[in-house]
Image 1 (cartoon, each protein chain N blue to C red):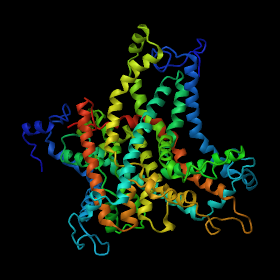
Image 2 (image 1 turned 120 degrees about the vertical axis):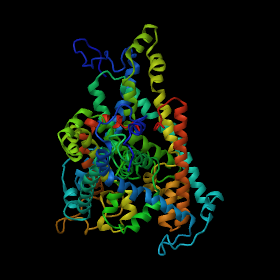
Image 3 (image 1 turned 90 degrees about the horizontal axis):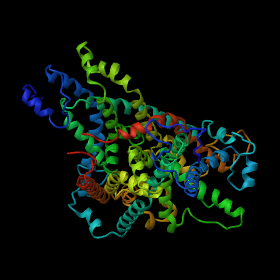
Image 4 (image 1 turned 180 degrees about the vertical axis):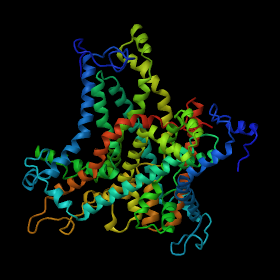
Length: 324
Length: 313
């Protein structure tokens, strides 16, 4: 139990994060213990499906065999990690593909919502703007299965596009199932699904721009383009830095479900990423230990990236993901 | 698109001048045409696939055969494809399963999330900080595919519907949004209720929840969309095709192009099956319909929900 009887202790507990939210003067302990019962269902779920599974990572150090179980599988030290450091060919493919896709997405996917938000923001009619927004948000709520299926129906060999091309005697264009185009296909799917949704944050930032700034700029003879360059874009800078840093934190996770659904047609060399490598090796091929090892390292690097990125955000004077 | 015609003043928010970029002089005409064109193309690119699959799912065999697969507008709309799918075969069962999982999952998720958010809504209460830390850390890293699978296996939930519900019960982001909402409720209300002798439970159900109906609704819809769209957990934990939710059916019969046989679709004796394109399009439409139905409710409060998302410890 807490020892919040002395006023000094309770003041200490109150400092910082909850400044100005002092409780009433009744003894705090009784009331606040009552509040603790409320978190129990959620806490149990968190522990059971989030924190206890983390212990399952010990099989990264075992020669795990499902029918013996975790408790009786023989320990194997760091043998499973050899794959990572001595370059199993498939693993190297997966790593390279992951980094390539992350890079492509930062270059092509990231700026798309910014441009779209600028275009939307300069619309005169609120009504039209709202309507377009609602249409463009919709794809974000579709599952990857639906998005991939839609793309297949549109661009597949017997899809809408190729029917159209054939009807006009322009031959066929094999987009789905060609390894060279696979990464472009993935990127265009992400753009189609999430660009509209991505504008929300940017539009919110733009709506907070002080209109006096524009007037002052216009008075000084700034053209439309210069107003955008000198007033609008600086207003977005903080948000852009923050989102980029957050994206960096996810550098090792790209399009898991999306790729898993489309791997069969294009071959593993081109499409394997770390997440699919873990799935294919562990659950499909039964190489549990190695998969768990890859997953563990990936998770740790991911956390390090998020924390590092957050430090970086503070360095830039941004709020970051959380404040310490 | 609109030109600024003084006779038709544009409705504006009070603090804004005539354009959505306040004070920016209207751009030159070519710019504005280009911009509108780009936006128009975006809207068309989003809507076109929907039009194509809805039309194809409604087209009759003659038209589909003539067009070679897809149609952009059904000449004689017929619901044959839907009738064949929804007569108690594989697809109708998958629809039922998905609806069931969504309803049960959303209810449980909301219950746990509201309780958790309310329990964490008063800084300085017993256990507040460690529990909040656990919640925030759970957003930082996922347990990983292999350990999650082992956990579900240990709990003997393989092939059980619970494996699709329990792991996703708590979404940290949603809990934080709810919590910020609860924290915004005036303290005086809660204090006065307490003085009147209300228990915490009463305060939550009689005061806090009625005041945050809108945000609870949005969070509920977010959860519902997530449950409806869940595919990977089903792939992982459900080996029995009879228990597949809609997304798995979609993957098997639309993406992987497995043929629906006579046993899975139901047509009158002797009648031919609707064309496979129409059937595939109809499955796709069926899996999108629920999203489109709840979407209007969702978008009304979407901005608010997303904006609150800034985590403040």
